Every structure is written in structure tokens, then in C-alpha cells.
Image (cartoon, rainbow, N blue to C red; front, side, top):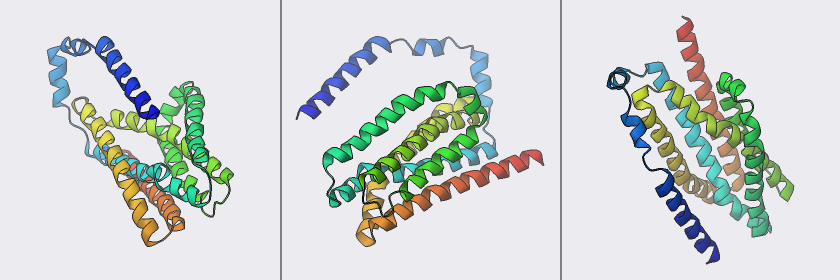
Length: 237
């Protein structure tokens, strides 16, 4: 009851901040030069860029299907190993602490990371998949701590870079649309993740689930890499 009450109070506070501070933001858009706006709307996104965006969306979907196992099925797995709810909750404390510590550090390397955006995405999403390998045969709490740390590093690297990748390839008129698609794919992964995980567990086992998540994410990374290599080759040709 207290947790739900606290969440309600925080959302009310957020609504007040939005009402007071976000007013009038659309006026900045209204001041744009009409000719500039018209030229932006004539701009078309290249076919190669569309393929690249579609391939990164596959990575996002796969990553969130895997990520949601931590929110749903892995908790049951840990309870089955006689680990407490407190220990499971501490994993998310670790997740938050790592994000708070590491994310600001990455901002000091923004220029370098932007130049190596593909590598950042490859490494980030690969860490998502490799985190599940650490859970295979896991019986000690340290295995889950290590897996969560690897997963969080992947999250810090990959998720912020997705928006940058999509923004760089979308035309000016379609930037908002494609960012919205990224959020839609994220929501789809969060919706499908617990269901897919439960079906795999019911029909097979947790071991198969961990292997499935690893393969799913790594295959999506390979598809992304293949599309980028093909687009690069076409530009050179």
C-alpha cells in the first residue's frame, strides 16, 4: 500500500512540474521559417537508411524480449533456488547504481562514441545476449549479480545509441515518427517477453530459455551487422 501511495505522489509531483515548466515549448517550433519547413518535408529517407533502421529495430525487439525475463521469469527461477525476494530486488538496486555511476562517465566520451556508433551498438547488444550465458547452470547469487552487471553495461551502451542511430538516418520530417516506432517496438518487446519466456519454460526449461535469449539477441546483432556491411559496400560501389 505504501509503495503504491508513494508512486502516486511521485506521478502527481511530476504532473505539476510538467504543467509549470513545459508550457509554451511549441512556440519555438512555430517560429521556424516556412521555406525551411517546406524543404524538410520534401526530403525523403534513402532505402538503405530504412533497412538500417529496420535492422536496429530487430535488435531492440530481441533485447527487450530478453530483458523482460529479468522482470518476470528470472524472479521465479531465483525463488525456486531458495533465494529471497530481497536478494532479487537488490539486483535492480545494482542495475540503478551502475547506470547512475557509468552513464555520466560515458558523456565525457560522447564525441568518440558517436564516431564509433556501430561498434557501441554491436558491443552493447552482444552484452545483452552474453549476460544470459552466465545464468546457465547458475546456482549461486554471485552468478546473478555478474549477469545483471553485464546486462546493465549492455543497456548503458546500446539503448541511448539506438535513438542517435535512428535520428541520424531519418529525414527531418520523419524523425519523430521513427523515434515513436522505436518506442512502439520497445513496448512490443516488453509485452511479448514474459509470454514468450513463460511458454519456453512451460514446454522446455529455464536452461532452454537462457540459451534462447542468447541466440535471439546475437542473431539480431548479426542481422544488424550484415545490413550495415551491405549498405557500406553499396556506398563504396
